[in-house]
Structure formats: C-alpha cells, structure tokens
Length: 200
Ligand code: HEM
Ligand code: HEM
Image (tube, rainbow, N blue to C red; front, side, top):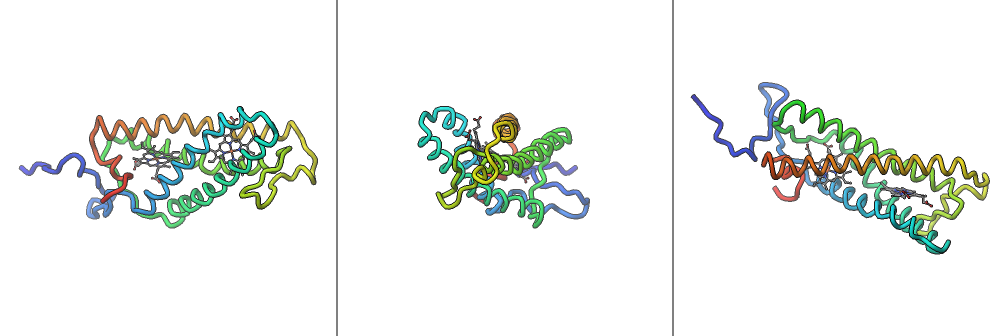
C-alpha cells in the first residue's frame, strides 16, 4: 500500500477536479506584495483612532486630515489593484488541504475583509465630502463640499459613524484572521502561512 510521504507543509495543493492538479501552492509575488502593502498601510491608518481623538487645535486636526486622506488615497489605489487581481483577473490561488468547516470559516472571513476593504475607503471619502474642515489629500484638492452645500452635523455624524463601524468590524475580523494564520503556522504547522509570506 502506498503511503503519503510528503511533509505536512507540502500537502497543500488539492484539486477541485480529480484529474487536474492545482498548479500553485502559494500566492504569486504581486498578490503577496499587495496583501502586505495593504495590511501595513491599514495598520498605520488605524492609528487615526488615537490621532483624531488627541488633536487639540484646529491646525493639528487639519494636518491630520491631510495625512489621513493622503495615505488613504494611496491605500485606496492598492486596494483597487487587489480587487481587480482577485475578482476580475482572477489570478490563481492555492487551495489548502483543510477540513471543510475551516474552509467555510476562512472564506467567510476573507469575504467580510474584502467588504471592509471596499466600504472603509468609500465611507472615508463620503465623510471627507461632508467635513466642516478642509480635507486635502496631498494638499492638492479640498474634498469637503461644505462650502457649496452647507454643513449638516447629523449627516456628517451618520456617515462618519458608518466609517467607524466598518473600521470596528475590520478590527474584529483581523483578530480572527491573524489568529487563524498563527494557528496554521504554529499548531497545524501546514503551508497556509508560507503561501502568503515572501520567498519561494
Ligand atoms: C489589515 C490587515 C490584513 C488584511 C486586510 C488581510 C486580508 C486578507 C485577505 C482578504 C486574504 C484572502 C486572500 C484571497 O484569497 O484573495 C488574506 C489572506 C491571507 N492573509 Fe491576510 N490580511 C491582513 C493581515 C494579515 C496578517 C497580519 C497576516 C499574518 C499574521 C495575514 C496572513 C494571511 C495569510 C496566511 C493569508 C492566506 C490565507 C489562505 O490562503 O487561506 N494577513 N488576507
Ligand atoms: C482603509 C482605509 C482607512 C482606515 C483604516 C481609516 C481609519 C480611520 C479611523 C480609525 C478614523 C477615526 C475614527 C474614530 O475616531 O474612531 C477615521 C476617521 C476619518 N477618516 Fe478614515 N480611514 C481609512 C480611509 C479613509 C479615506 C480614504 C478617507 C478620505 C479621503 C478617510 C477620511 C476620514 C475622515 C474625514 C475621518 C473623520 C475625521 C474626523 O473625525 O474629523 N478615511 N478613519
């Protein structure tokens, strides 16, 4: 009888079709680059939770809004590239060998993460258009439309609240996502983590 002699870390690729082998056991370089660029910039943006609360003067707040909207705009571009690669080009991704309940949980968490990656920038730009202060990415243009439409505190609070709610949802999902990645790395010791880390 033939036994599977592959180390656990190599038992990644399975196939949806019994005759066709899945060709990749890890994400490609562009996928990885975009994953870690987006992850790094999001973690930086989350610092705004403390930043906006600690701004004392109006000048400080305007400077913070310039920084937040500038990094946010670069991040939005990377997120768009990532969405195109994932949902339009549909680049090949590894299929991991894991129980079906784990696959379901992971797709659910990934789906919800993608939802946040769409909703956070969208509600961010909407919040910017309703802001009482100028919101100027790279000091180039003022996104705030208040000078033409007038400031409405209730509308601003509503949309800013949505931005904040998706950010809170993202933080909760990241606990599960990072926890899951560490579980695969240290408990299951399989190839899930290395499929997204640099190197061959
Ligand atoms: C803001 C931070 C992050 C976001 C928004 C994020 C988002 C995502 C998404 C949406 C996927 C699914 C990729 C796809 O199949 O299309 C993914 C995969 C992955 N992420 Fe993250 N991630 C973040 C941070 C991290 C961190 C800190 C780690 C490691 C500790 C990590 C480890 C992984 C791994 C190992 C995969 C591959 C999972 C698999 O193929 O099943 N991520 N990430
Ligand atoms: C994924 C990207 C983003 C993250 C993680 C993020 C994160 C945050 C956080 C943590 C806050 C503070 C919320 C609180 O006080 O609890 C905030 C507020 C805000 N964000 Fe974002 N944001 C992102 C993208 C954007 C974008 C693209 C824009 C617009 C260009 C934007 C505009 C704003 C504005 C105008 C506020 C309100 C600031 C105030 O209170 O005066 N955000 N964001």
